[in-house]
Length: 213
Image 1 (cartoon, helix red, strand yellow):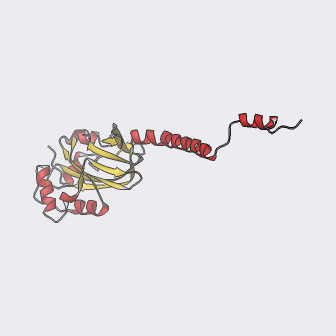
Image 2 (cartoon, rainbow, N blue to C red; image 1 turned 135 degrees about the vertical axis):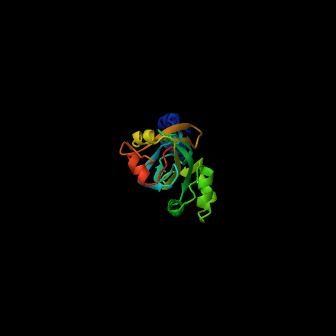
Image 3 (spheres, rainbow, N blue to C red; image 1 turned 120 degrees about the vertical axis):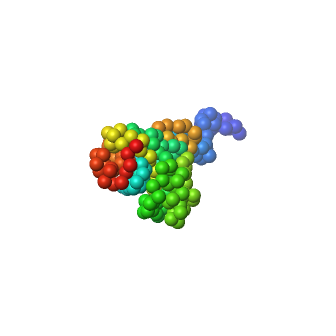
């Protein structure tokens, strides 16, 4: 007996969920976004700053100041902000910037003969030699992920013996992530601190012109 209605197979097929390219693409997109978020979130919220290369520096003869320039980078995405430097035994960061290689070279090459006793006078003396200190990016400064940066620090010695004893201590920087979380990060080279004195004896400091408080 003939019929104009759908066959039994057609009725069964109608009960199965239809395939939708749009639906499949949508689910793939959701999965990809979830995976990206799972990778990005920890890196964005917990930024790291690493010592990545050489460290150079020197003394300001006739003063209690030393200078230090270090290659650093961050693994934070898309960026991290270095907000401050921590004190070390016997030394205090008097000023700190993120600079270019040329700026660091100019700063370290400055010949200060006036024997300043304050960081303000020291920076004024260096600026007077044509070094554009006012244009340096002082902390807090944001650095992008993966970029090479130079952290330039002026340290002021308050106790030579303590500073010598802590020469291989870890240096600490305060870091704020793109999403606003803050952390304290250690800067070391193969687990050893990058000290600001470049010396482990009071005699060496004296010969270099450092005036121990």
